[in-house]
Length: 403
Image (cartoon, rainbow, N blue to C red; front, side):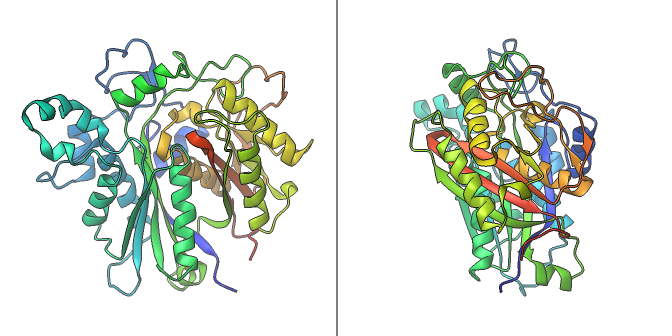
């Protein structure tokens, strides 16, 4: 039997912290990063609250220690900061003895910069260097070059499930012998384009979002990046590395219902969760906590709740949405919330669904609303994307993993 895949390094930056330590503190002390707009230059600054990383482009440049001869987008800088932390945490060497790759995800790509210069470019073909950074893969290429990752590189963009899919794809690359270790994750920065786009869809809440609450009125957008280093358990143990969690199960399913909405029965979410649990060799009763997608929109929270009731019946595990901490970070959401799930495993604590007051009548489900001690062996996290691209990953502790 092949060696299980484990997480040996973590890096993260979001509105609640610039690294893993700050992030853990914010979660356990219920400190939300959703605040008035102060970084994004938008005419809607007074209309919405956002999960911004409260650092300017120049400050991110300094924190990332980026090569200033290259054009850096905010997405790439956030990604580099988190990726470098994960690489250092896993104590990766560059001896060439191990095949190392990167699978990163993004939906916004470099539009945080290209949208600033697009009109100039089409008028006089100026600022080509920033137009060239528009595509989703630019941040992956810059991170790989800066961190000397040469054996494999690819970018995934499947809307809001993007970075959870990067974890699954990276796991398969190791299992199939293509790589020995892989940096997986994603990065997305706030931009005027995404704020305007979600505003047009009429699914933004002008106040702090309230996932799974009857009064929910939409989501808050956020930005950030997170990365995990994945390796085989055997190799990690030989090198004396810390094992944060095991990748015990994962699945992707398509709802095939609507471009931006889930089916009433939550078919895609149901299948993703069911298949991930089965792949882990578990049954639904084995899941100790669910970090739900929980965007705070009318459709998502209702249909995700329906899917959980279909799968778990009357024995739904403790669950919560952590998007009220960071906002919805789009392509980075899956890996950011995977880090949160691993923090829950490491700390043996349930994370709170802040801002919740009243259950949705149709499903009558009450999430965890305070930090609580718990015995956690298997934690499930969901990320569902536009177009019905739905993904689930199960993380397990080393004491309860399934071989």
